[in-house]
Image 1: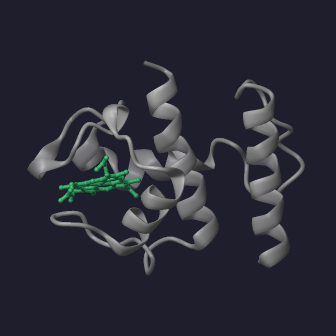
Image 2: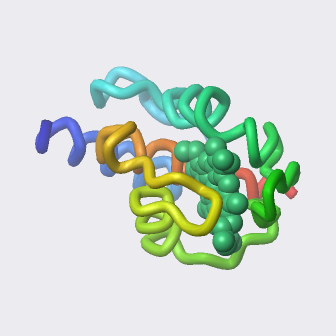
Length: 108
Ligand code: HEC
């Protein structure tokens, strides 16, 4: 568990360092697409595929200015109408979906 989390983080750091292009999929247990799979099943209901849907007062994720750590905490613990995900997703899954959320900003 711990080792695979470190592996996921390493892959993500490598992705950032390369400008977010492609990452080696075979390095960690989690494929790079895992974050968007989780996002598409857990988050699009309120946030929409591009993060801009804004159901029940959700902010446009593309315009969010929260740091990665703040997003991690918000997704783990919930806020307002958004439920906490720490009992729904593993830490590695939350980390992956947070990276997907941060990626929504850069595509703008
Ligand atoms: C039930 C609807 C709902 C779902 C499902 C949901 N959210 Fe949210 N989300 C919200 C609402 C409402 C807010 C605004 C909370 C507030 O500020 O009071 C929010 C806020 C956020 C923010 C903060 C944006 C900012 O800049 O303030 C992030 C990041 C976020 N959600 C990510 C996610 C992720 C990732 C998922 C899936 C794991 C998810 N949300 C699922 C409703 C939802």
